[in-house]
Image (cartoon, one colour):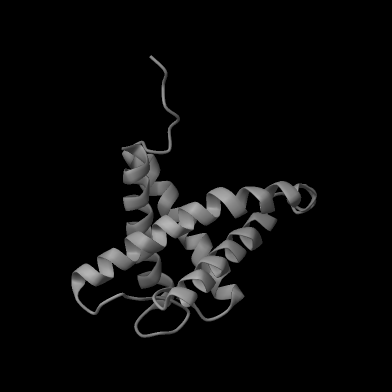
Length: 136
């Protein structure tokens, strides 16, 4: 249940990120929906959030482990570059599918990843979904 709520939070944060970073029209950071109706847009946001969670959980762990020296050297700021790269990978995968996340360039991905992580962190903290499970 917690994973489902986290995907919903990520989808909502992704929608807010496209409003903040993308603005109006296809530039910067935006979503190309499955269909032009509301359900097509909602399904697209949910699919992109799920793909981002999968990419972040698999490829993200590998990239973060390999780049530990760069994290130490830059005092954690390299994390912005890693998150931008992961957003770019999600945009590339969704481009192969023909719908989903679109990013104009790498730095738009970094800015989108920064806004997305801030919004997701705030919403997960408010909902309590970021807390680890307690064992009974």
